[in-house]
Amino acid sequence: MKVNAYCVYDIKVQIYQHLFYAPNHSVAIRSFHSVIRNTNTPLGEYPGDYNLVHIGEWNDETAVLTPLSGLYTVINGQEVLDRYAAMDNKE
Image (cartoon, rainbow, N blue to C red):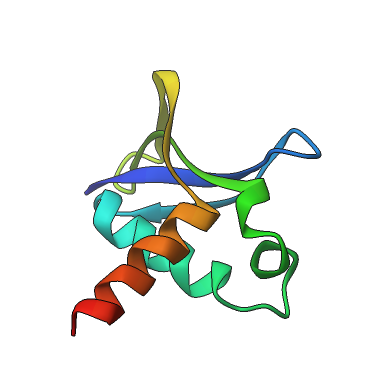
């Protein structure tokens, strides 16, 4: 099965870290949100300093990680907090 590969880019330190897999951007954003909203972590303490980045595709049947031709920033940490806050306000 093929799934998307994502990581978190630290804007201040300029490194990519926390590689993880998700079937699509929506699930990846939800996972990113669960980490970003935890203020006991560096990501939650400074959400605007981190971007969720789609880096490629993982095939768990062949163990092949295929990179994208270019990195794609899905969303910034502060943006994801703002998006979920707006959704909560609509309810």
